[in-house]
Length: 272
Image 1: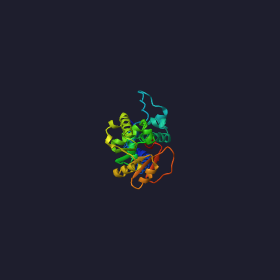
Image 2: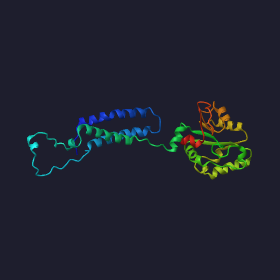
Image 3: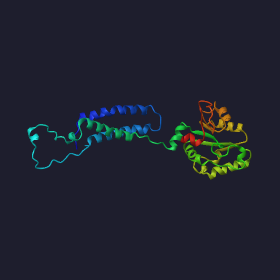
Image 4: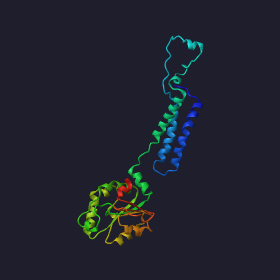
């Protein structure tokens, strides 16, 4: 194994210090989910870089036995064979090669880690602990109370998001209905979709009322960290009372208030 001096290691540290400094600055000034992994990667990268630095890039050649010294060697002129690496890699190329190896190791450890859906949900909700959500147009395919008198269909695309929300949030679902049969259809649709078997939502947390004012009253009484609704009117009314809101609308609208976000669907808000 090649024997590198302390000065060689110091030179390597100097070559990568600028890169590491910029990485640290970006990590400390970023509040994304990758910060912890980046800091951990930094520490491991330094260790692996030192190990690679100590590992010879090319194995030393075995000196043949009983080989007569050449005339140039005996005369002591141009004896460059004392360091085989010197012939293979000139000083400038060797330095560039070591820089490339160190950079490769660091880049591998700083590859972005794709966050899980649960991490995205938690981040988007700003660690909110209570969420209220309307059913029509958000969780159900139907958009009006009249449609619920005929059928209730849960969007399959929202199931994963709902499951993640119920893992760390107290979730309440609510809707305005015209009759008791509509309530039964909604509860049956939610049950068949497996929402009640996930462990985070029970039927008692599915609330029904007969007017839009009643739904607004539910939200204010529960005082959630987030309310999700497809009605712009109700969202506007609650802007002063609820910390954050998500307005679901298939048509692009102007932002109502700074604490109100908008998206074409619930799953798009978290998966976008």
